[in-house]
Amino acid sequence: MTDRVAKGNRVVIAVDGPAGAGKGAVCRAVARELGLAYLETGAIYRALGLLTVREALADAQIVARATSMPFAYRAQDGGNFRAWLADEDVTEALRAETIGQAASRIAAMPAVRQALLSFQRLYGGQSHLILDGRDVGTIVWPDADLKIFLTASLQERASRRVRELQGMGKNASFSEVYAAMAERDHRDAGRSTAPLQAAEDAVLVDTTTLTLEESIKQVLHLVKNTLNQAEFTCRESLAGSR
Ligand code: DC
Image (cartoon, rainbow, N blue to C red; front, side):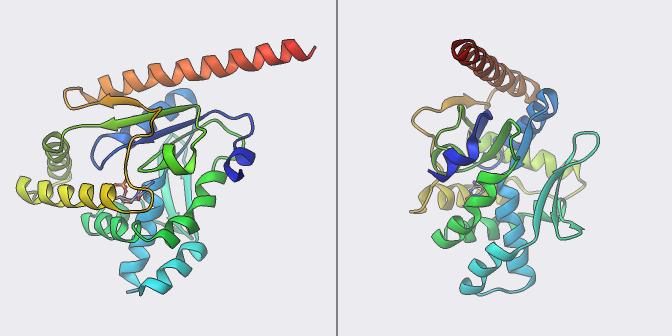
């Protein structure tokens, strides 16, 4: 299996969940704390969404662009993670609601998902990796060492998004944000290819009543256990081979 070949001895942590559950903030903090490579897979779909909007691409062109887009995702000094299209830093541009909606629409196209798979599987080389998205524990890394389904109620996720937008000085109506999020949830969970769903062996973390710090603490605990277990297993097999 392609993903097994790429996985090698590294530890892979797959975090899935709906928009606004806090996946990005939690994974970034865990990656920084434990020195893991991190990939926000949503940024790949958003980058393609951005190109689709900018270049007014038709469906057939979107698939071709998925394989040819010059996308990169890199950690910078200080542990910030930035998304690039060639030499343009598109991190902020990708956050726009219109781009999120465009990403969700193109993500429902099976050929697009297929075209973006190998990037996600090869990312991070041999480093231990944490990645988040909608199908990373079910499709991208079905043999991940730890799968987490991070979620929160729609009401709470919409409230967080409104506070985030207000913090950026933007006008945000709760009912509009709530409706847009409900629409995206519906599309991401209802599509026939790789829908948003918890893997059978995922650990459920519901952050509805948790602060960000509490969510990070819970996930850190799970990830540390997995890394310790992997180290133990590796030591055992080294001892066994002597
Ligand atoms: O995680 P996000 O909100 O940045 O993702 C944007 C959209 O991309 C999301 O609505 C659905 C799609 N997506 C996906 O289909 N599969 C992933 N692994 C990640 C994102």
